[in-house]
Length: 286
Length: 238
Ligand SMILES: Nc1ncnc2c1ncn2[C@@H]1O[C@H](COP(=O)(O)OP(=O)(O)OP(=O)(O)O)[C@@H](O)[C@H]1O
Ligand SMILES: [Mg+2]
Image 1 (tube, rainbow over the protein chains, first blue to last red):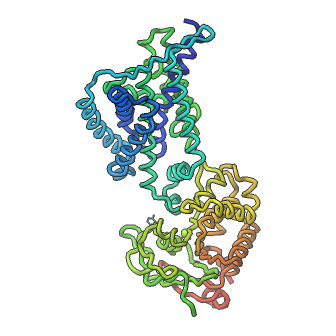
Image 2 (spheres, rainbow over the protein chains, first blue to last red; image 1 turned 135 degrees about the vertical axis):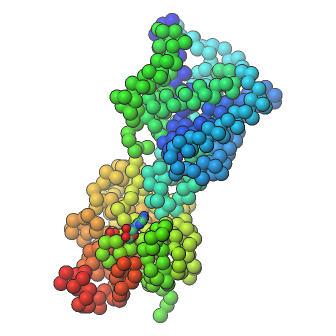
Image 3 (cartoon, each protein chain N blue to C red; image 1 turned 45 degrees about the vertical axis):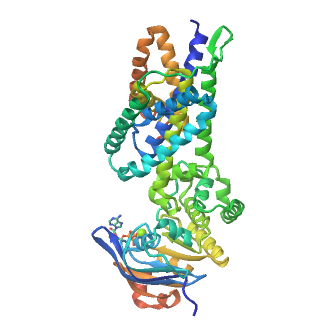
């Protein structure tokens, strides 16, 4: 396999990783909550997209906004009803809470959907350019992942809600003086995290088979992306995602795919040692 | 006499078991600059925080613009027209000067007028316009205070409360800020100022409340208080 193919594979995978991780990163950075539900949110988004397509013939592009909005609602409620009660507690408390909620969601999904891997097959063919071949659905998934991540960046930077999220993250009391209802903004932030997870799941379902057994792996990826790129910012997730995609693709080629995961974790450990804030993370900055 | 804009009676509050304020009576008239002075730890900041709802009051009543706003919470207090410029500026790191100012208008939805108010603040403090796209926490102390005051004005408050205008600033800068406050007051803005620098506060304000260990020790016009030997000795260093 030539180097062009390896790099393109890595970038496609990396874009998907960025989209997978960006919501997790946002929630962690703003709320200081490690959301153990994130992987299940991704799988839920993927399953809903699959069943909409499989049972009702709804194209993933059509169902994606609805799936994403539904996940936003679920995320908002989870934060508002549960996590907000303990959000100022040490990070272990919120981790335990979301871990417990995740076990519930995981089991519900296994009962309802069974753990059979499911995938939307769009049959878009493959594209060849400069000796590189790539299934069109993957390119499509990559474009969608980048577009959604970019949209989130824009919203965070330019919208009233985006400003409020940063304000709450930086200074709760001062944000309160601006009339910002902190609990509401926390719930929105968690909702946006779930929304991005749901959208990532919908995209994944078009590219890879989805199953409940993957929730742990998704969280692992999100975690590595955050540490490599830098926590709590969209550019951090983007850089971290692309870096991890490239690392896995390159190391998979040289050492075999079974070792790519290990190499990813090793790079994460290395970055943790030499640059704990991640490649583009600045301490305390959005 | 018409009714005061802000009228506080018998207000008590504190933090947990620690009571800080004991039966505070205070009023601010529409259109004036009033000030609260007192030594370190007297309870000035706590009083402003209780008015804006950050600290829960345990007794007493706060009437504002004819409404009872006792215990309604920070969001409603701001909505009713009281903005609080906190001690130490508390600008949001990671956000530009412009974004910080816009956060002051968080509860407003009148886009056009928000833009007008932004221009008004850039007019009042031209340096903020130059620094509009810079991280607000990279500004100098004086510029940060301008930004914090601007952020307060952006909510179009009926009453602007400022905690420690002069804290850590050079005298020339304090004069510059005082001029700006006089200017916005001339345009009809009612201001309640908290100051440690009593001399500076008395120059700006028409009335003053002296707070000692959580109680109002004396109050009156700043002209009268400046002539009071006890005030002169305790606060003016004369
Ligand atoms: N968050 C808090 N928890 C407990 N006690 C507090 C808290 N904030 C202030 N206090 C106490 O309340 C009292 C009044 O403090 P406050 O900050 O209101 O004084 P101040 O008049 O603003 O003083 P300064 O001039 O130093 O700003 C002090 O004894 C202080 O220790
Ligand atoms: Mg104070």
